[in-house]
Length: 351
Image 1 (cartoon, rainbow, N blue to C red):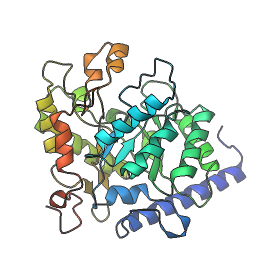
Image 2 (cartoon, one colour):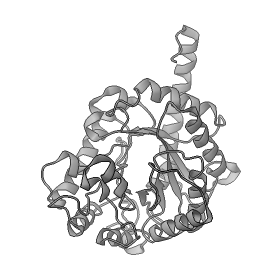
Image 3 (cartoon, one colour):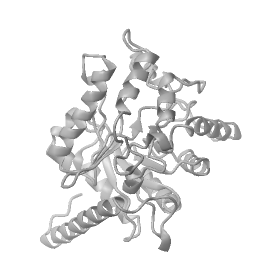
């Protein structure tokens, strides 16, 4: 619950201003300090510095294992571990970061432990239900275990405000609980995520250290022209930066490879070709940054289509359920980790 007496409000305000100061300091550091391995002195890698980097440039993808179906009981076996490793190996040529959606007691630790040796450098950890203390505690444990070797941030909730699964107050309380479980000197940025249409809510824009909208032209726009769709996503991100006055990380965007008449693998490829033009990290003096470094999503998820009754929901993958690549995957591979295609906009290799 929120604190009500004056002394507690003053203490909370001081903590808030200290956190704001640390965010501003870290943003300044990201402009001059590259991130590779853990920093000297036992400090954590920085998620913000990872997003600003270019050797190689960041590339994250929304990830659920190819065989994962939340409707069925999950058993962690050697077969599952091997399948998970194969999933990550299939993604590694194009991606070096993961976007997760929940803490799974049996699975999340294995994902992080498997990903880092394969070259993955960053993970946006997820808390699906901010009202579940076990999930908050589990994410805190992941941070304590992996913050030396991975650049970490936390998204507390995904599209739960629009679905009425929780409230802003629930998010704030979850953030307080998470902070209480971490050492005072450890800064791991947090946020929440909603469809771009929800960011008219002032309370949503004020929550967290950065904004992480889901911007889907296939959902919010009538036009399926892939070039116009990519431009529309970036315009929405720029507008949100202006009204939110915070850094913006476009957590989800993309178009499906099927499931609707006008969506095909070729349309998906054209969208990503256009979206990957220009810098992946937009920073100008006096304005917060914007990161366009994430793709939605790794694999087709048939269970989503079955659950919702919407074929399009199962066809967002850059790979199919057998890990076969769609052309869009190759777009990311050709523009990630290459001397020719540095897109950070801040170094001589930028176009």
